Amino acid sequence: MAPYTITLESDFSEFWRFNLHVQGEVLASGERCDMVDFVAEVASVGSDLDAPPIGYKPHDRVQLSTHKGDGLRLYIYIMPHTMPRTLKISDTPDFEFCVTVEHEGKRVYHRRHVVSQWSGANIEVSL
Image (cartoon, rainbow, N blue to C red; front, side):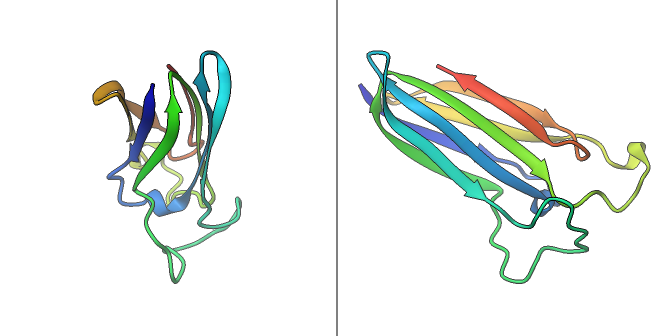
């Protein structure tokens, strides 16, 4: 058994318009031995910001580490709090959000997920 390293990243320039919540559990022999909990709340859902708020610290790359385990369940929520400036769907393309998980020195999960600028995304990872 070894700890998990979870890396979440996006190079989308307007990622500040999204709140990021990560929850999950680390398992050892089928039993929960650790919880994963991370929140990057930029603004309340329904805000109408023109720019990142003062004091905003980008969460475009987050790295989390867990206790030792042999299983992992993650739930990643990417939620818009501010809608795009335009109502034209063609001017608001989806963007990529990459999730990478390493365990025992190996990359065990690596995927680029597609995220809607309008609805965000819910991502589940089970290892």
